[in-house]
Image (cartoon, rainbow, N blue to C red; front, side):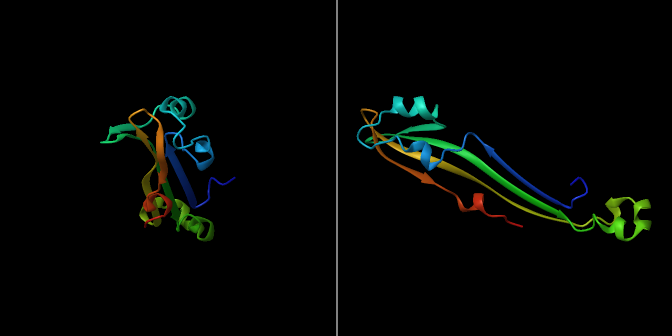
Length: 128
């Protein structure tokens, strides 16, 4: 029914998105790396620091929008149905892409010290 609709919205997330509720089990000073991996799976990356390690769960968020302003014209001007739409097509589009992540700091005993989410502004906005 919407096949002739001139609007299109697309959103793609790569990797499983980690939400605030998904990390409610993490208690700094108590939760171990093995508990995190058991619940969230393997992290996207791991980096050694002077005091322990930082692990990251990253996911890519892509949003895209298009509108074809000339799609309804053949219904208003029937003669245009004989003309290839490539000759008069006018489309506006925009989108955004960004990597959001969960960062978890661990001490040398693999116990959580802190954790936080990092959100990139480009992931939540359309940019024409």
